Length: 141
Ligand code: ATP
Ligand code: MG
Image (cartoon, rainbow, N blue to C red; front, side, top):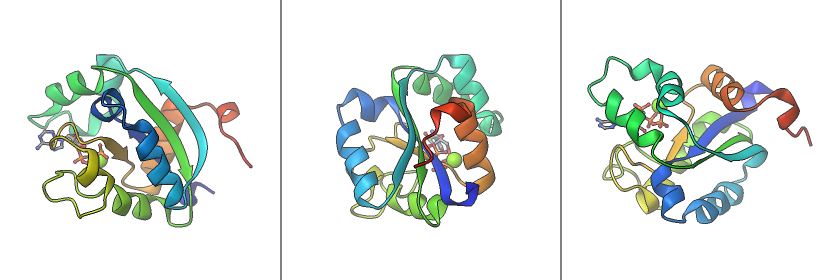
């Protein structure tokens, strides 16, 4: 089951601009089923924990500030080949390099404020999903 799931966040820039509905529509139209969903806000400490793998990178502090700057929508998604297919749907980290029709090409503002997160492996999808959701918050329909 875990191999068919990924985790996403609609980041503060996209939520703040009112693009959540359009982004969720693209996600559903691409065949992803929503398993869990919540509107929440990270504080700096939680953002730091979520992006801990990047703690040595020069952009880490800015990234944590940005990710805790406003509400986000967190979701677990299910589809065959979920992780890879979702990375394809969102496009490259830098929206300037993202392919036409991808979520980041359409909605990201910059390499930092890039609209959405997508897990990079099955293992991280499971870890990240559990960071935001308990088992009872996941729908097994
Ligand atoms: P995400 O993990 O959010 O899905 P990603 O996997 O495409 O994005 P990562 O390399 O994991 O990219 O970087 C995590 C996040 O850190 C990026 O989405 C972006 O918000 C920010 N980031 C990455 N590179 C830079 C950079 N060079 N300058 C500023 N912010 C950056
Ligand atoms: Mg990443």
